[in-house]
Length: 520
Image (cartoon, rainbow, N blue to C red):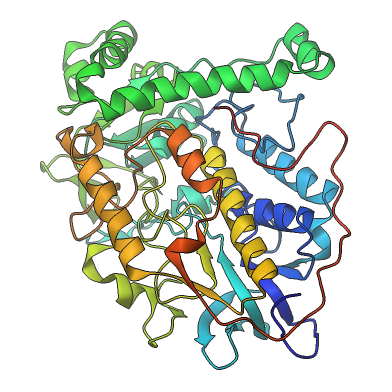
């Protein structure tokens, strides 16, 4: 390879990818297809899967259509539903990794604790639960849906019954005939409440903020459609492109808030048709513009709230006293089980406190109170040969994470190719390039519904800056990331001559191509 690492050991690789969810598995496949075979994927869990391994709560499913929430280079014509559930997505990811031989480079049960850039050696030193590893290139593929945001109210630690987060579901707890308090009203709560209400004696949902909910066209894939997806060339690509177009339609409206009206009217009609109690309907009606928060879809959430044993508490949970969960408005409910559905610490990159760059400061210290920032959501100045997948300011309220990911994988592949062809030791994004990009991002965000919709959301970091959203079209994101821009980087002096990379590749099936075949 173009970066000399000294004697090859099983802990010394050209590329180390941290995390084996969609991002890490996709990175391993893409890089191996490009001839970068000297890599390792370190996963702290016992198996791959990321968020789709960890989130096993009842009703867990994707809110992006199945054919769009999958790698373009590994289409799955056999999805059972239009919106796949957790188990099916996890199975898809495992089978895709197996088909592409990712198991050869995957090491499970290895948690990365710290990573330090060694300027003299031009490589990363990783401290892990399995000892030290070294890499010339470090790819953080830990994803934003990783660290649970836990309920923190007085008295919770003294609650006499089971308490668990949706991302850490306790399957040993039988909810049959029990009074269940669900705290939170986001995506996981919208899925959990309908799934558990049939067996619970009572369900109490503590809703701090009402959410806009659109109907979800989720149904078993008809046999005829499944046959077409498997037998007719291009059918699945056409469906993927159509679903992409629908998603982009919402994205266009979110960038031009005056166009949000029709979608908001649809959500309001969905609420009116499903909930007949005017008091309950008022409590479920948001006071902000649709798109300001993550857009939710469900056709079962509102009907579940109509059930006589399901109770909405339009208030945040503020305390627990014995078996009583107390709301901020002073009301309360007695419960046997508390389910924490408060989501994830989206803006807090795992390992940010333990990754140290050229000046000895961590990513967390470098970013400070303003929150994460990166060049094209991928590179951070002062952290050579470090690449973030699904990094800051890359998402919209409608884009599939896989679309974003594959665009980044094309950029990562281009950066690795530039290193290889130029025989450089490392590259580091220029501070000016990073600053100019992020200034443009923040200026463009000022007129979007994300910033002007009148709500608070996880899109914003502690410093009050939007660290999550991409303010332009997904097509523009794909174009910007389709080609690596060496002018934005400082590259080291050429290293000593080294052998060319092996040409052997991981061969996909004839129907598959290289990643990046995104709909435009």
